[in-house]
Length: 115
Length: 114
Image 1 (tube, one colour):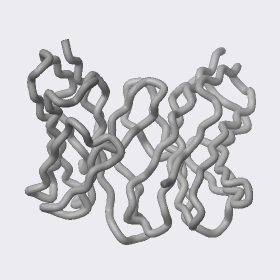
Image 2 (cartoon, each protein chain N blue to C red):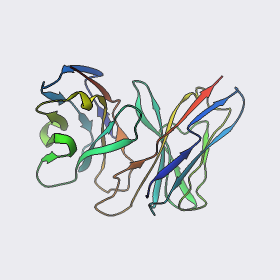
Image 3 (cartoon, each protein chain N blue to C red):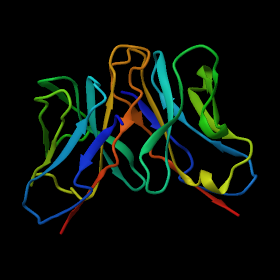
Image 4 (cartoon, one colour):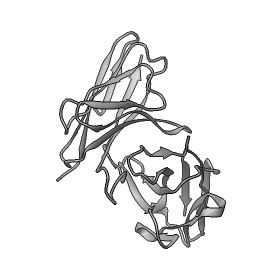
């Protein structure tokens, strides 16, 4: 089945540590996205990538970094510079430039807790 | 910049009651509009979308939404809710170019009680 796989599902880290969240898709989608979900805040865009080796900052990129070396992979690193990293992180993908543009397919999410 | 407002944070309804969740957006150009749903413990999934044409769109599970351009609104409706509709609902918008990321509202939590 095609879809998006996020790992790990749950992650605990100590303050001051960087952590990388994995996102892999086998949908052959061009675009990939990272959103952060907090209670009562909805989904806020962290980073997105429309093509391999290119990515753009979203609304809340500070303290995060990404890479897009392969079409199917878009890992997110939560750095120690992120002031409030405890959250639920959602990865998504979509086709680009067609009538299906921006119909997002989401992964199951990764819940990060900073102790 | 685009923004989306969902007026209700938490809605509690009895089974068989009618549902309407409000969504307003701010953007001057042509937009694509979406409703996504997140059932407890499940992935976010698309409920329905509007790109163009008939402003009344029908989605899965008996949901529908009406795009009213003059009001910048895209309210979600269902005539009769079921307990299984308990979920969080998100309205989203992006500019019609189709290559800009979706902007989401803060979500509305729906609780349906028997």
